[in-house]
Length: 410
Image (tube, rainbow, N blue to C red; front, top):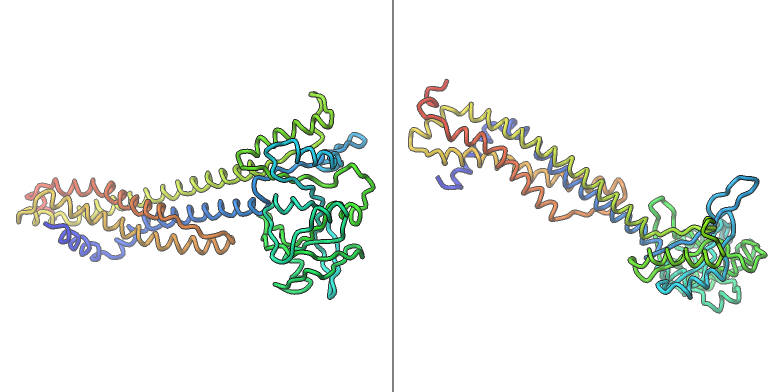
């Protein structure tokens, strides 16, 4: 009996009981669909995490000011200005694997345009800030070091500010915006960055030189204290841990802290945070995929159960086939092909449903849809393997029947 003839007989037997065959495949369909959908969603979540941290910049270490204690009450991070401009220069010059470093001060201000106003985040930074964050200009340029030193009233703006004041896609370089009634010339419009994982709009920002920020926005009278924090870009992801360690040692030495004293600053390694997030996402994806595989195994048990019922129902048919010359391996292959056909068809339907489910979920969550061909092929192969493994026992049972006893079966 050739394979195609066996397959034809198997399909005819399955079509004879359409509803039972569909219900048997249902476990495999759900299992395969769940595996594909869960892995696709997990990959999409991981990609979203990568994009969120990439928006902050590459290989970023953030140095935050320390806390202050008043009447026994300890303030939180950045409640004291414990960083100085000299600290910033030391980080730039004395830590070899730092490619760029910039101050970052921030406050919310009302910005006045020619035809309206908008409340946005105003940042005071140095030109290195755009290098640390990998932020390019769509129109115009970044302010220069000379403008930084002179405290020039120049600014670059994000896309959201442009849209709210002038409309989407408008080049507003050369125009003037006012902050606290102080006019600032717009020298650049930044390319779009998007949102953070927490929903913060990076493009809703206006960025000015840090020296100008101190003089015109924060109103600070201190020439030494650095407002805000320091954003540091390491030369590579592998270097971020070393940079973090070297910055801590450098600042402790500069601040003359003895070993028993706590740091009066905080250092955050965003690369480590991103890696931890990605590992957590991978673990969750693996867990969900494992649960889906359990569902697939349960579907295999359902196939074995139905095949055993089928063997019992077709005992006389088996006896007749053996009586007219059918060999045990013919009977074995017939029932094995039926089981394999059930699981394979279920796997194919599961792939289609899994892709549809993944697309719907990714749209709902706002995550990218990332389908992995290797996972789809593995799910199909596993569903076929389930059909072979769980169909083997019923097939062997059918092939070992005594033809005389089978013919006498009622």
